[in-house]
Amino acid sequence: MAAEAKKGVDTTKNPVPFEMAQIPGPEMAKTYMPKVMGAIIKKAKRPLLVVGAELFNDPVMFDKVIEIGKMGIPIAATAHSMKGFVERGYEDNVYMTGLHPLTNYLRFEDWKGLDGNGQYDLVIFTGIFYKFANAMFSTLKHYNRNIKRVSIDRYYHVNADMTFGNLAFNPDDYHAAIDELIAAMKK
Image 1 (cartoon, rainbow, N blue to C red):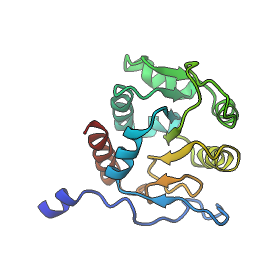
Image 2: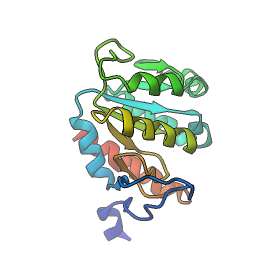
Image 3: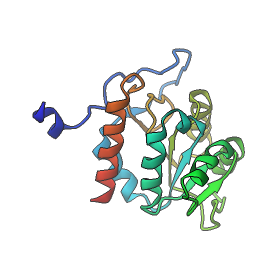
Image 4: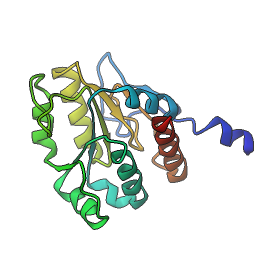
């Protein structure tokens, strides 16, 4: 058991679309270990964390998302998820937005971002209903190749660039993977 703790959570297993109807085309997302994803997120110049209402199904993730936000990464929160941030007293660097308008804005390379400081180079998604997140990833995959697409959700997202495998049935592994990702971002 101690050897497993040192090794970390293997998030590269089970890279199968969560919903079998998802057909990616010739380019499919690659699964990465949490430490690698954390290092990539840390190196991004203009990352954006996009969160949705599924966080209410996993309240532990609200705290983890806030921890990521406190590292200076702006959070784009849906109207529904914004309530969770307000309830927790964290509204710094959190922007309330709709997923569809945000996706539309992200398509354009000259968009100035939620804060007016320019387009993002990396977007991180979590807590968004699977079908919506998949549509967002697909749109960015086809219309703005300059943005790196990262999923730190519990599901494999076929249209992301980087994702975990399916961790939907083991919340403890999922939370441990997010903890490893956060630890890598702090190094």
